[in-house]
Amino acid sequence: MRAYIGTYTRGNSKGIYLCEQDAHSGELRIVDATFTEHPSFLALHPGGHSLYAVNETGDVNAGAMGAVSAFAVDATTGRLSFINQQSALGTAPCHLSVDRSGRCLVAANYGTGNVAAFPIRADGGLTPASSVHQHAGGGPDPARQEGPHAHSADVTPDNALAVVADLGLDKLMLYRLEPGAAMLTPHEPSFVSLAPGCGPRHLAFHPNGRWAYVITELANTVIALAYDAARQSFEVLQTVPTLPAGWTGESYCAEICVHPSGRFVYGSNRGHDSIAIFAVDAASGMLTPAGHASTLGHWPRHFALDPAGRFCYVANERSDSIVVFRVDAAGGALTPAGHALDVPSPVCVLFA
Image (cartoon, rainbow, N blue to C red; front, side, top):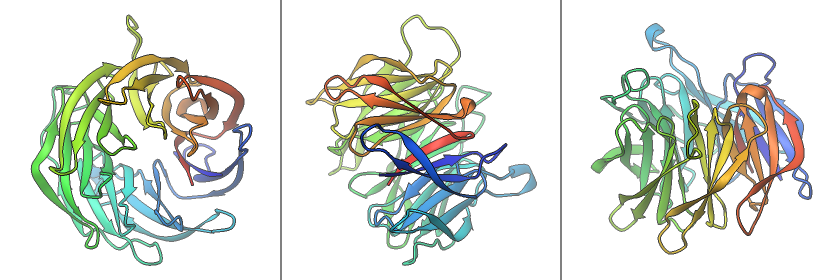
């Protein structure tokens, strides 16, 4: 099994790291690196032949935009070769996803608070964005919600909608997706309102396609939603905290992930430096807290489960480490596997 690690390219980072996994122990070993500036989030083409990275750069005051880069994946080695790069048409692009047909890439620009869609060529390269939507407004937190901040862009399991979590607006913005033309059109309704000041960051769908979970950066909660594919609509079901009762330190949620079995949901706490664990009710999709696991590092900006759901890999950004945990199949608990990989400023782990 191969994994790619995205980083911030400050200090000694070499960009995107290619690793191989020991299937028995879960240990990762770096085998290659490909430089591109600040590849803070990664996505694979469903065909496996191309990888995409945001380049989280840009300065709105200077008129400089961020970018999205495309790489070919060597089928034998997994090594990357640069194809091309396009302007993200926004600053600080921080998340991207590829639709299930492999014809369209959608990217969220945090700095300018907009979303862009790019056609994907037959060779995996990107053409200039064919659809861009600017969000407007703000939220009650003047320090973090002075304007829109698109923080993630995901495609629904039925490939019908692009869902953009906007931290600045406390909304999930909904767009009808036309993959062949890489076009986004505001859905009706065009958004799902979430709790004021919660700051939605990332979203993960349950394997059954009927439930989705949003992690909020500012409120430190997970919001469970039901997704009706026939109506292409969302309904808020529940909100649960990610931090232990009584804990009063400063912390900000980051990543959320559903176990491949659909039985558990995990969310990361930056500051408390833990992974919150939740059990999923098989009938309703509702969550029950099932404990916390220390990340054995600082600032878990991202984490990922391997496709088999046997190991969890936590990217501790500020302690420059990927720490490996075993996943208990029965209860979802995470226990240290005894392995850690030194990587400068890791911010994304992607398995291929």
